[in-house]
Image (tube, rainbow, N blue to C red; front, side):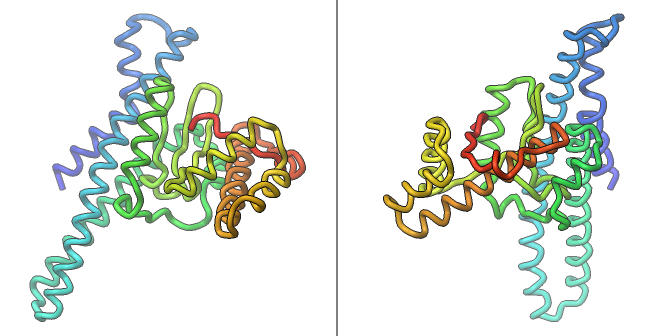
Amino acid sequence: MKKFKNILKDLLIDICEYGITVTYLEFPNTSLGLETHQKALIKNCHTGFKKAQLFIVQELLENQNLIKRLNEELKISRSNRDKERINELKNELNKTEFEIKIYKKIADSIAWQLFYAQSYVARKLNTGEENESYLSDSNIQHVIKVVNKLHANHPESFALITDITSFISIGDILFKNAAQLLLIELKEGETNIKIKNLITDAAKSGITIDEFFDEINKTQNRNFSKQAQRMVNQGIRMKKLSQIINKGVSVDNFQAYHLLSRKYL
């Protein structure tokens, strides 16, 4: 437990103190009120977030894999009626699950800083269910690859993996840059990539959704059309939600009824 507490202390330093400490070292004995200093502060804060996120992802993966192994051993112990070992395994499971919850709560603190602790934003990002996603059950490597690409293209920004939080249940990535906060939903697979490319091309041409689906229905099968419909609707929801988060208002249904390209993918 002492080791775990020290780990948490280091994580909280990365999340809550790293940015301001490094910025003061870069600009000693000067005010951080200047625009250049504020930009440096934000970038350094995001650097601390990136360090913490990488560690949390690694710890969640290890703990979740441990839970799987413990559950498998628990089944064997129950079949052998080994009560002493059963109790040991249950205690180890409780401890591991507790650590996972703590890591997710720490990731929550990053999210709250990204949207400046605005409770209405938190409510918009939650569907009412606690986020209990297992990273090992999703293609976390793909998400990490996209996150790294976003960070490389926008060094001052930060892309939060939503599955490491306990309450964000919409989107795969919460992306914060200087201008706005965006939700990004990732899609894999040959069909999804093909649909995404068609949506991007259609958005550039300025056609409406009706025109887009008329063309899809003529050239593709029913399953492809249904998946395209889901992805378009999801894109509209993400766009409207991002507008609500950043502006407090959103486009109306008529305006939303046009294809919207994904700027950062």
